Length: 126
Image (cartoon, rainbow, N blue to C red; front, side, top):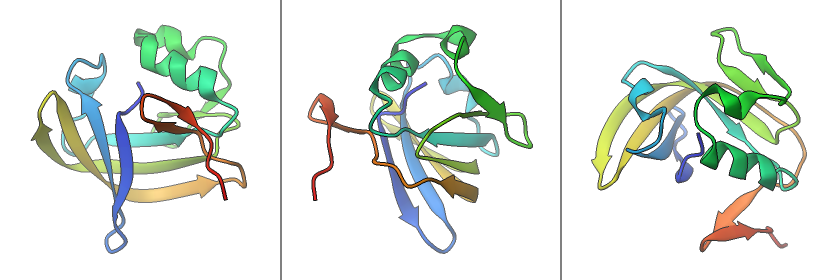
């Protein structure tokens, strides 16, 4: 599942926010307290982003390199970063739900991020 929006909320405690369409096939699996992993894709992984936004069910993982975190959640291979945490709040946001997760751990690599801006993928320029 690809989230519609993702950003940091707080440093103390470390919190992130993700917006998920209510129609997303995994939306119902995100109750308060649920453990989650946010896989942050690199600029070279547009096809992977499209796959996870279009495919449903376990088929989206077929043929993709991954490992499981200590809680059994999929962490994709060769990504920019991953953030592990648990849902602490859920709010209504129109046709989306706004989930706030407390960060329990994170790992990152020195790669360029994949960005989605104004209905398309974009590059971050310096």
